[in-house]
Length: 300
Image 1 (cartoon, helix red, strand yellow):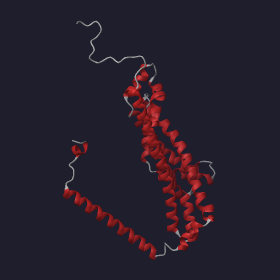
Image 2: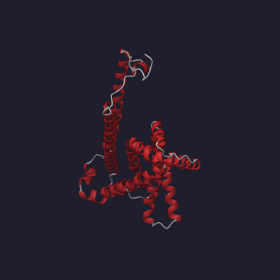
Image 3: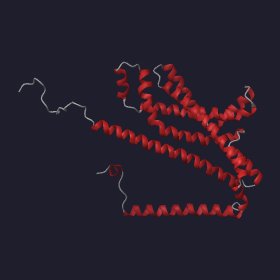
Image 4: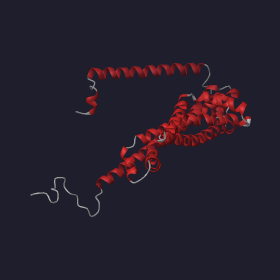
């Protein structure tokens, strides 16, 4: 009996027919909703060629979309680096055997994981504007990077902690057996393996950083969404501008997700190949002894 049959009963002919009917009705309902939305937009002239032709002109990309894309990528790139550093430091801190350090890191990580990113952006924007000497033009960028770092760095810290806890206990025991301290075992043996295991999830978190950078438009950071809104204000094509912006974000996120999937499959294949080699490789010059062989000196 397969595991699938153990978990639940296979649907019979009547159940399969009902499932097919439900799927067909669902597709028809979604198609009807899409048709209603598209028809309403067409009646209001949202699909007129005049609203879409600006995106075929180089000046639109030169002065609006490309500068906005570069601003988005700049904020996301800086936030990725700072989030990884933050996540590694506080992830290792949560794994520390020194309880006060572990408690403090745990409180920091849990707090910033619970606070919405937009709320942190608004807070740091107000704080930096009124209490620091940061140039006013750079305040939105700094606020966006800090907020993205604190939230996503806390998530990465949890990835580090769960990655280390997911390793077999024999890894640390082996390190202690050869004379390493728990801290040395964590840094030299456990962390490298945990980082490889969490790499696909880490790349997925980079996708979140890229998407959340668009929230900077609410505090005046001139990223891709803000440039699109400026373009729409001049051309009167807010819906096409938002759709083009969404398509750009989808393309970027798809590329990152595709890279994460490829990396995950490659790491999985490499790990499987190593395990296969270890299972089939016999130590040179050693003849395996059958498990039933009598011990030396045993009575006949």
